[in-house]
Image 1: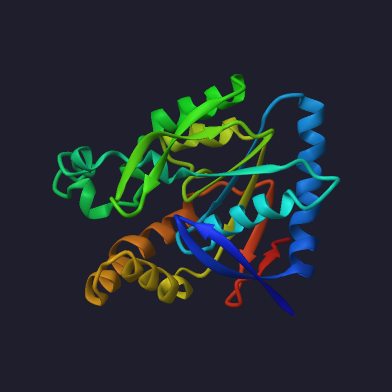
Image 2: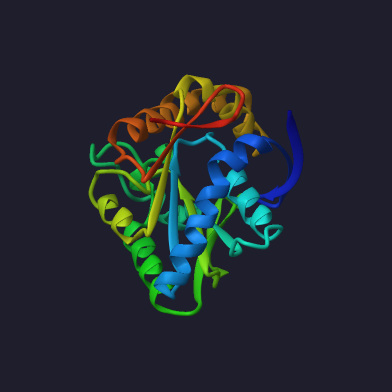
Length: 246
């Protein structure tokens, strides 16, 4: 039986439903492991959770952040999204994909539309310093905003699409993680969720549907095909449950 939790995602109150028996089977042991790893390393622990768009990464990591604060034997988790590292709109509108024909803006969300060197530098900074200011993504303005999130948790859980991607320059990112999770899913099963999310952001049905097939679905296939396995591998089924992959 699933329980409903109110979670703020991108400034919106979202009702998320989780089967707590499955959450405790899968994620509670991970949170306890991270707690012990952080104590042994005696520094900030960096955990990366990678999955295709629409696989519930943001909601899940924010839920784990919220849930960790309720557990006495688990160190608090700070959830951080990768989306703050999109290139600024002016860059996306003036630079092309490797084909030399398609502006990055048209494929926003593809690996090429992120400032990977900046992302890498911020992860390194977070591992070395007590505090690090990171950019966040303003969904109302469709634009990243610099130095708007203070990263200072003992366990930082970063979520993003391409954290385990085996493509340059992304392949350096995963080397900075202390632990990794990869969630696979059926790209076509994400359509309803992704189209709905796009429309919720103010786009019409036709644009949202085309964006799914031309961008989100393409990226999801690329992620499933070209990502390295995580230390923990899960599959998100049609019910939104995260099941271990043997």
